[in-house]
Length: 257
Ligand SMILES: Cc1ncc(COP(=O)(O)O)c(C=O)c1O
Image (cartoon, rainbow, N blue to C red; front, side, top):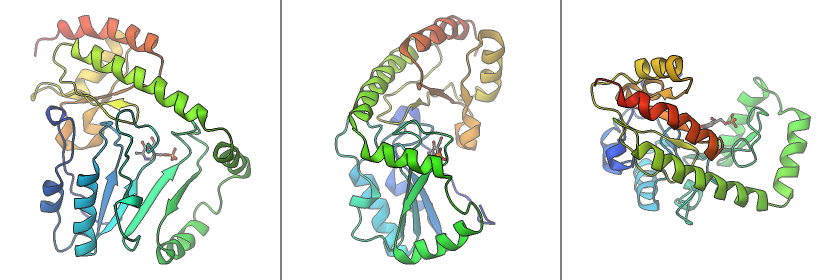
């Protein structure tokens, strides 16, 4: 990333893909410039509790580390009413940029409109960069964004309830799948089940696609620590999810791991 060295802090299905704040702090060093916190998380769907977010933010403020908080799934929360946005876990925005978008809450993926909430000084620098790269968001998408924000928000609640049903369905189906370690994602629309330690998720996903027609994203797309995992998206109907697992469950049972 712009010449910087990236350190990943892995999470695991056995631990509900929760982030250990002490592990995050241990990964910080004297040359750490920035931290990316994606909550709710893609690919795991994990939602980090307030205590985790507050501990990380406090340490970053103390060390002068910039926090880039990607909260594009902030409305897709299934179990916890109290979403711990960085915006309400910190006293100020001095070292925080909170990034969000219309893509997930309003199904406006591809229209390329989102926003950043940050300190005035940070916005000043960002505007300079933005001006010479994308210039502006396109006009029809801006009107769509205004309509989304000013319109009736019931559609968001309705969609969250539907995603919750799909989440429950996927959790149930993963539990029935041989060799997959499941857990309950609290948000977004992904599950990231683990596979046995020696299994190459990339090889598995490719063979699964060829032999069953079902597409899962291999874990190595999200870092070296998750090669033995696959990402399952549940942004589709429960019927489609059932059909996919009707093919995947017997196929997985035939694997010789
Ligand atoms: C964590 C995360 N951040 C950002 C984005 C991109 O959002 P947008 O469509 O607004 O560019 C995605 C889309 O998949 C995502 O999963």
